[in-house]
Amino acid sequence: LQAKFQELEKEMDSILLETKTTEREIYLLDDAIEVTKHHCENLEAQVRALYSENLKLRHDVETVQREFEMTCARNNEYREKIKAHKHLFWEMESKMPVMIELAKKKAVVQELKTKKEELMPDLQNPEASVIKQVQEEITLLKREITTLKEYINQKTDLLEEEEKMHAKLRKEIEVHNKRYNAILKRLHCQLNKCHSNKRQWHWNIQQLEKKAAELRKCLGEAE
Image (cartoon, rainbow, N blue to C red; front, side, top):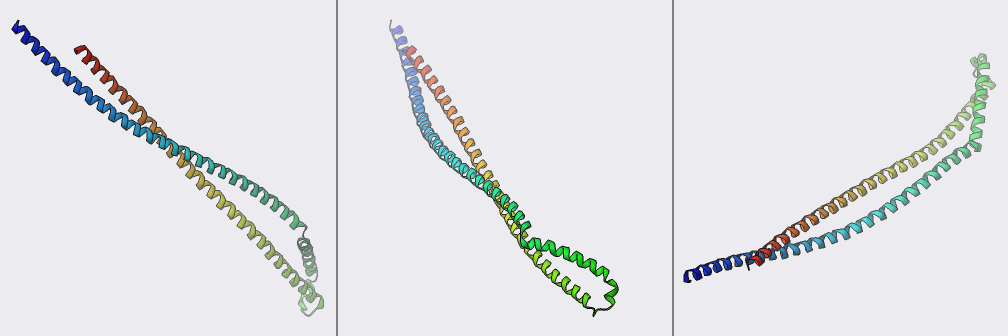
């Protein structure tokens, strides 16, 4: 009986040692679970902060998009006005007295050229009054034509300046589009990374809880 008693005591000591070891493992797992949960809570707080920041950035992007659309609408309206202005300008210019006068002067120049050809035999006499009169009229017409050309050049310069301004606006719009696309791409990457990390943390917690449950079950069977 004493031998059996001693054997039972050894078995009890072994069971107690195993129980203490199991309890220590459970405590360690509980601590690890608490640490992991705390870490997950911190990460979830970070995720919420990132989500709030994403919402704010999305709101900012929507605001900028609305401003961009308004700018495009204003640009389209401006283009239509410029188009109408150009059409009206050319229409009015064609009816301007100076343009009508230019056409008349061109006709006169052509007529004078014809007269000049007819008077070629008299060109040998530079003192002829008819030749002088024709030369004076031609000189006057050339001056008027030069003045009209300068006026047309000024109008052409104005139109070129407007075209340069339109090109500058198009470049600014392209730069804004590239910047907004880069912001959206970065936000999508951050959000996907947060979701992936969250799924990994939940899986780790489930594995730890599963292992702790198994250890508790073993402890219960040992008792």
